[in-house]
Length: 503
Image (tube, rainbow, N blue to C red):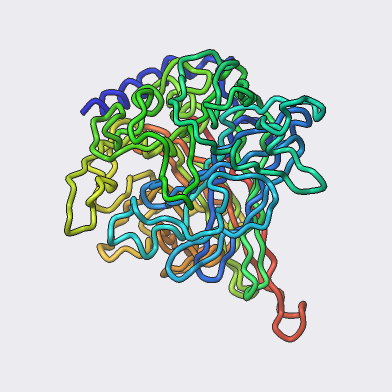
């Protein structure tokens, strides 16, 4: 399929660009950028995830796409828009509601839909994945356009987007006629950034969005009250030093019963490399809606989706990651390593044959049939890709030489090969069967059991000789029986990953 050709082209181009130092995208060392990626959220095993998104721009507002993707196949399980005024902070909690995750917020910033307090959506999950599919994953946060300031004494201030989102005495007006309006005129994404009218295109007084700039910073805190544990994880921030066109796609008020304006926008094929969509580059069958854009492949200061994936692969590719681990039984220590792969879905070859028996009446489900480089060796049936053997050291620099000394679970076949499972792969150390020891992960976790309880480990993130695009962190928990009263207390730590790009 075309998607496989695209992926091969991306991999080939990566080699040519590997020595280029002036790539348009960079990982922002100050944690502030145009795009933020939170590598993990979870509501498994008593977890609640708190999300905070801040606009550090003290002049411009931001129209921000927030999308939660599941840990198994990066399926979109919940997405909406947040309109941040200058120096605004938006917060929410993700909790478990029955079998699915749910968002809860009392924040006064504007959103579309205007009420985002609702359960996550399982419409794009296969029936077998619906019960677990929303409980773990990662989060995309994308600035779709700046909202230029308008003076309060402007005669049309109340009709402008800035006037609708700017807080007054701590509350944004969120004027519905401005945020949604009745204008259904398609947005011209080929127009200059200064002339794109959204979202109420019929309102002549509506202020325009301007080119998105940097300013977003985000973090997630995983809290488990019953275990008195909290882990705070910063987002990976991407900064673009090239001009960016407005990337706004309208998202209607879902409470009004409308999913989006326009089921198949004409600009779709050029705006994503996601081959699941019938309008995308891969010739899939899933119907695309405007809320599907933008995604991480949508050209953002780059020539096209393929070029953008090349840049992101170059930024995220890691031959291996290094981290300390602690699993000493005397302090009930546990270690989980999160290896999130937020661009993996773009290398699949997708197929979708609508199956009424599986509830796929709306052409909304997709099945992985194969993948291209760097995921050419992905095993679709198990959702895994084989990587190299880990290298474990204890604290006295003793080293496990024979990989067969490391037991992988759950692994009924007893093979000594190692793999990453899912889009958000969790490697748990010396914990045994799921859920994992620190994060309570269950969907995509694999456990490595070793003779050592503490030390340093190098985990391969290479498929053969090909480094995979990975972001993430290490979560460590220890227990102090003498603190926190009769029941003791847990101490959670988050360690940034160290990595190697080449062997």
